[in-house]
Length: 172
Figure 1 (spheres, one colour):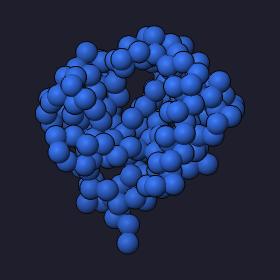
Figure 2 (cartoon, rainbow, N blue to C red):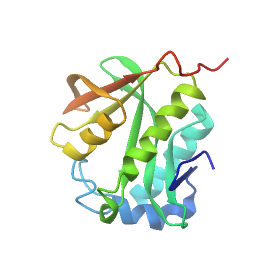
Figure 3 (cartoon, rainbow, N blue to C red):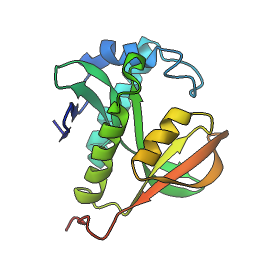
Figure 4 (tube, rainbow, N blue to C red):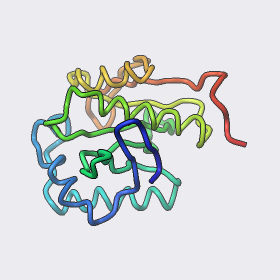
């Protein structure tokens, strides 16, 4: 386990999570702002890429598991290159039948606090398609504000950011 919230556990993904994550990533509505929804091999590569991130950076996207035991998506921190600058992004995906329950916000807030308090980052961002109103609301509920619009991976993208507050600790 990496993080725990009132309703969720965030933990490192394993290859055994492929079926549960495929349920999320194969949904065209969940993935409407990606080039396409994922099939089984794409989901496996997603997991493998995050396992590599854990080894390389000590963080990545983590599996979101309800305390009842059901894996329902992912949320975590990812290094991104945006306009020639390296930044740490909070990203998230939640199973569609659980949208509107505040689960993405709860997970994203835990990742924000972890990024500031345990990892010592000064700023965290979220990269969001301008038409993705739900993700924009999650970012805003996560104390983020729109700082600019840019082309990221050749797509129009809103860059939301939040700065570490003075009361949040910085790692030694």
